[in-house]
Image (cartoon, rainbow, N blue to C red; front, side):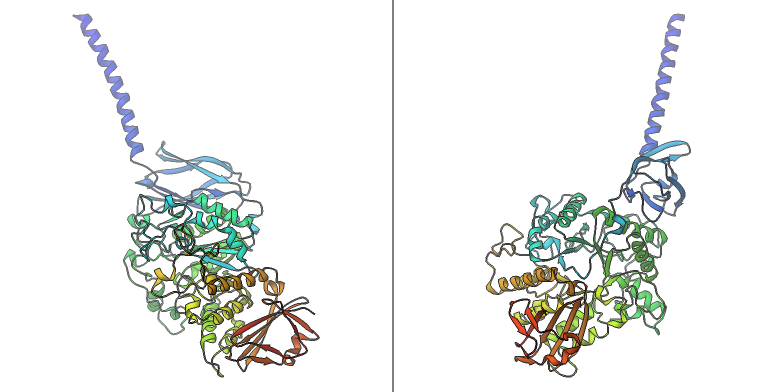
Length: 629
């Protein structure tokens, strides 16, 4: 009996021991299950950046109950910010100047117990990354709406975990164009003569509809899988660079998509303007610089939402401001970008824009980025206000090098369509250019005839091929950086709303009957337009006066506008005849520029012209002359 009791006691002790160990394991497992990281951004960083601070956003259930620690040479955690929402931490790191690339754990502890280990990497920067050259006046930008350009990968047209699926029959739906399609057609882009590609946004847009245009970001650090992946985006940049083509990224700092993961768990009440509740922007741009308007009216413009599906970000929140700045720097470094196009520029907090542009400039002094002051604004001072170097009434400081020149675009169309008189016609262009004194650098403005938000230039000009050629000739010889929207080279037309404006590029889908990449089944007029633009673009590549030269122009006279581009001893003369008749031009008027020059050659036809005689310019044409000697 005693032996039985001893054996029973022994097994009870063993059972208790295992129950204890099992309970410890269960409690440990439960402890780890109660904490997880859903998002940690930026996902990695680089050694040797100009700014020695890095803010890491950490998001996960009850993550603020944990304390992050890092043990890696050259990195110290100098501040951890916990906010009202317990699911967020903002971990601020100090990076030393001798920080080396490597991998380490960010350890998250509760008291002394490790709850989560997160692998983080510090990468090595590309050689001379900080001194990268941005796009400039030597370039011509090809603007592409990726979903509508070319379908290179049929397998990603629809993705199971993304709401909107492919439907090419729906003009407002996703059609399947992707990054692989652009990669496959880089030879075409190079041969046409384009030297930069600007893509409408390609970050994830997990919206239930109208997601193809890209302007409702739902993830700032990942390419939309229907376009490809971060690695394919990087591949596009590398392969384009091999062909001397830069990559410009379209970024949206003003708003996000309503399906962004932030909206399901807002970091703070002030992360989104108007406390996260929809209130439409007034869209009255003038209030930004109106000296008489009240603060409430300014706020109604900047703090209002663009539309209901685009929650408006509050850049006055310091954590959000830092997040947007770091994300912008991250993509430049990751994808080897040559530029940014910044959407809805004046809708943002102006002090944030000053800080943001300054940070980009301090990290990349030669990088270029262009702001969009639109829609509806053709006011030159309002556009100039945002460009670096412009004199402002309130001493506002901007480091943004370039702006989209909407005033020029409006003047171009009005001039070519308008009746010639003392206050209309070709003089519209002259008057816009004559007001360049308000800009910090007019040569760094982006000029264009059309883009993704307006009717195509061929349609704006009444489907007149002569006016089209005039517009392209002016855009490609005027001061500034030209931008051409895809399809302009084959005079695509447009009617209806945005979905139709951004129609598919013919040949981008295997089933297409017409192929603009190979010229198969193009109409004679389309083929002629493509040849014309290709000739101009490739000539422009090698023209120093256009790439680097100064502009000199003369006030229009009798419907003729004449201007020059000069660089050293090289000279280009441009004669714009906006009349419905041939005009003979007496060249004596231009003696200050022409001097003793005697001979010139047409860039398009290669015909020679004697500068000691009058020159006849046909009706509704632009004559571009390379002044030889």
